Amino acid sequence: MGITRRSFLKLTGAAFATSVMYEFTGQSQAMAADASQEWKLVDVTETSTICCYCSGGCGTICSARDGELINVEGDPDHPINRGGLCSKGSSQFGVNSIYDDVTGERMINPNRVQKPMVRRAGATDWEEISWEQAFDEIAKRIKETRDANYIGEADGVTVNRCEAIASFGAAALDNEEGYALQKLCRALGMTYIEHQARI
Image 1 (cartoon, helix red, strand yellow):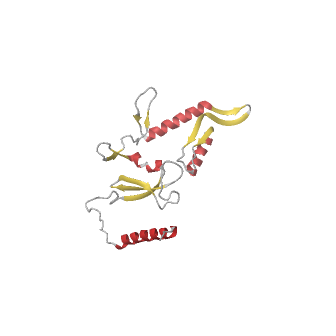
Image 2: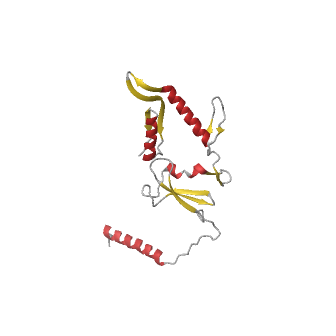
Image 3: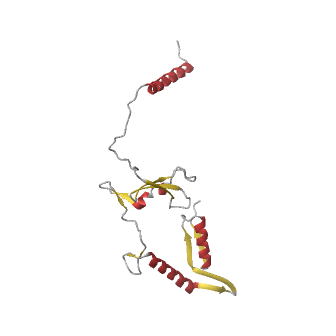
């Protein structure tokens, strides 16, 4: 008797279904985790926050134990990213911590800058300064530059502008922060205002 294509497909399907049913009906060994193994996220405090890399506003969950950051992952309940993160968002844990190449132990990133630093004219090393000093120095330089380059009138027309200062907004700014920055730039008379928007 010859085997038709239809009978071959029926026979193959029946064999596959039988093998699947056998797997479901047979006993299987219960696999339990080793009781001594400590899971990475045991006894952590989870905090929802927003990713710091762009204005997309993706939600993340930061897990901390004893005040120390343990893990950063996407928030599955967040309406924007639904748990997914881009390559930069996924790597933001590396801003805080890195793993030693030799020992494999996690440690605070030694390259992370946590305080304002300035390199003075002619110097080769960076100097650590306070936040108050950083604000004062920035404000002083902006005022000096604006006062030296302010144009109140050009060709008999009031223009009130300063072309010596420019603003380039970061992509991490949301709408409200961008609006406040725009107001500040316009108040200083700036004409070169740009923004690195990605959405």
